[in-house]
Length: 342
Image 1 (cartoon, helix red, strand yellow):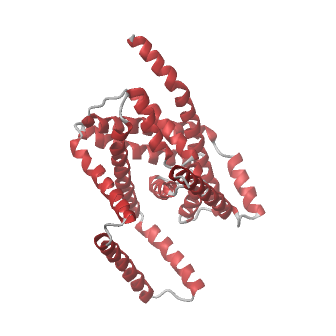
Image 2: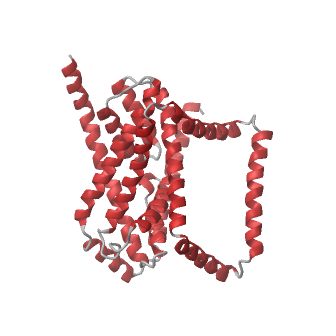
Image 3: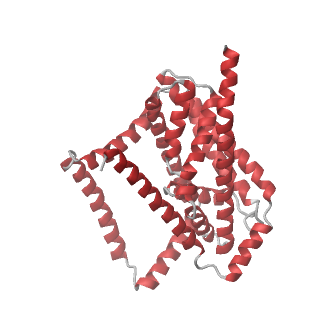
């Protein structure tokens, strides 16, 4: 088979696989819902305060705008200063593309900016790696803050789950825990050994390239001229994410009592769920993650699932609508700009 056709076939099969996973997770999250549960979910949606959706979308718009400004800062050391409008619209279109094919948006926003700003797409790859590297660091910071501020709740919830596993499996002793830690250490040691012993293999080289890319992305910040603004936008993006969850709580009576610490937990688990490469921006995964998180605070499972689906729906349609508007305005906006220059 022709290598190009083989590559396309593998891409299609991968998409079908993740689409199937997405459908499975939707089924998994709803399989045990009783008739009463469906009534509770429908009632929660019917009584939801949808006016809250507007400020949630404003938070998302601001976070994406800040992301566009941060991306532009990363491009300046390369000698490129694209217009903020084009950078912003490229970011919005990228998020829309991710709804159909995970990670497609990263490639698409580079090609869009290359087309309208004459910035070589290959030069932008490093900036995307840098963005993702700092997002990973921010997510780790959010996780640490969540754990330290709610250690008693999270610890109790984990202990409860372990006890449930113990009752089903017949025992969960300290010996098993030591065994798990030993296995983890063996895996880490094995990974180091593989990198050294089999560094000539293509798969190992590819993994090493990815890890090196993340490291280069993190260290590239030292070349940024506007370091203060870069840090500000990095923090602001995640503050807006947190605010969108906090404001979203007010959409339902049952969740309106939750505060910032609860928002941190939902943001943490929701962000981890979004990493799963399924079409539709974490369809099924996000709702399950939010439901599981809120169950730690004794929120009824049906209501937690309803809230998770509500927040997912807001993010989905926001990305779809804002991306579509940006895609429609981009050619017209640049035509107008070129006309003004002429």
